[in-house]
Amino acid sequence: MKSKVYFSKTITPEKVLELYRLLDTPLSGKIGIKVHSGETGNQNFLRPEFWKPVIDYVGGTVVECNTAYEGTRNTTEKHVKTMEDHGWSRQFAVDILDAEGPDLELEVKNGNKISRNFVGRHMADYDSALVLSHFKGHPMGGFGGALKQLSIGFASSYGKAYIHGVGDVDAFWTSDHDSFLESMADAAASVVEYFKGNIVYINVMKNMSVDCDCCAVAEDPCMKDIGILASLDPIAIDQACLDLVYGAKDDPGQAHLLERIESKNGVHTVEAAAKLGFGSREYELITVE
Image 1 (tube, rainbow, N blue to C red):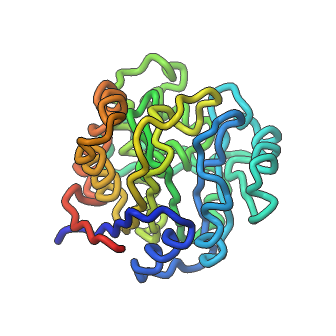
Image 2: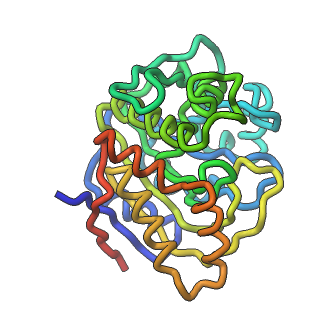
């Protein structure tokens, strides 16, 4: 059976909530709401005001993890300040999952490249997750969407380096590229397994730059906004986003974003994730006006 992916060209905070409700899958227990806090200086990340209706409706805690490179989010102290400066903690309860150690170690069953994944210790406090992703390009992964949020997003600072280095944190910048993408798929699988599938995914195709929200200096968006997608399948929702980019042939910025995605073999993360079996690249796109 194909996975259902709801899609709307209307990009508003209210439409995000509408698509979430259409999935008809209430999240239970204590809910972690994974966002991208946005590196200081980045102009493209989706602000807390945009996500507010769905976060208020779900009633969970906004969660993030520290980065593994220099910036304004690589220590808990700096990350807390960034969350305040960007307005997250002024509107929501916020939890930096790896604010303190030791990390929570997850097993990767039948992984392509890694057999374990290191996530923020506080993840043990949560029973389910809402993964809110800003779909755009990425300097290393080619693109960022639900799979990146599950893997690099939930990983602790150490865990991020571990994934990038394909199990060797000293190889952060030098590991084989496709092996890094496969390690992301492995890490994503471990998070899906941890939550026993109690995860809802929303991708927003807005402010689509070739650069990630982790870049303090990022290019301005190159493509026109496309829409909002919601699904229970992280592989299907990312595949649908890629297909929508490829389908936007009249957009003059399409070639620039596709060059970033293809030069980094971004689709390989989706391919590797599908082989692990925690979702499908086959989907039914259900358009909502």
